[in-house]
Length: 185
Image 1 (cartoon, rainbow, N blue to C red):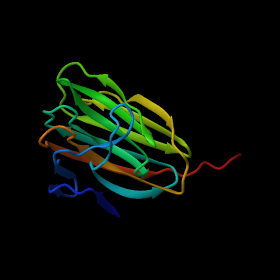
Image 2: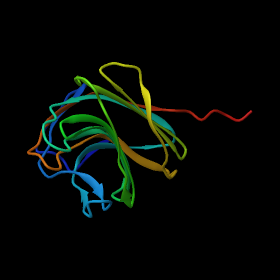
Image 3: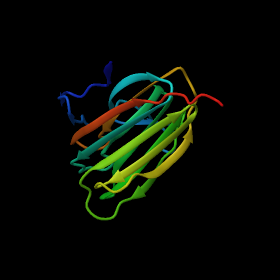
């Protein structure tokens, strides 16, 4: 079952898509560099246990500094990650933030126009792999990281507008696939 963490005022979900208009002053961030703690971004999360792959495709009308959309993996407000597109100084950036009480941030600028982005997050015990693709290109590794192995985590689409007035984003192709453990030989 999916549930909103900080529901937006304006959203619509059909069988195939989720359309969201973000609220202003929304973000996920903890302490590092800026000193503030924010857990106000929008995320439509479902609880899952064990190993899985989660994919989604999204497009947004990014206009203001730090407008962002993508996916989130979460245990609680101090242990989570988000990956996707973040708008920084007029450039779309592939972005990953990992938070273990303090947030870190990595970005990679895109060249050329951005039509849509596809992300795939894979969980295998304590290892998380995030792959990304823009405009239909093949998936490529964005980050491999340690994330504590717990019984259950939450995963789903997320979006925020830390400095802007809000923007529209559309998610599609949201797919959660459980992965069976391969028996030892």
